[in-house]
Length: 147
Image (tube, rainbow, N blue to C red; front, side, top):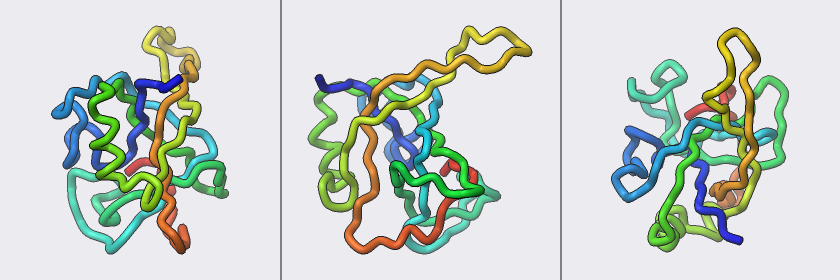
């Protein structure tokens, strides 16, 4: 079964370069991929609209099943996407070379958690693009877990 959900962590997020709302995607909410680490890719650049004190890498990649001490789980946005975006997404992510599309569990906070109580999470299966560029050394983890 193909999920129609996609977890994104970089330029496909709201208000970023390829905001999925401009391509028929429907924002569901923010979520977490446990034991996944975001890594900076390419040269660093300053851009005030990005978090982490405005200092960011040119791009971002995600590595699954890679817990690192002192690094938070990957923070993502969860989107419902139409089937018509599959080929476009695979093309821009260079599926199978730069990134590889996989189905993963994503924890998403539920809006009905009462004030003052712990957040209630629901786990859903969603596509995510894991960074898989050959020879990448994963030397620059983004400690906050958010790009």
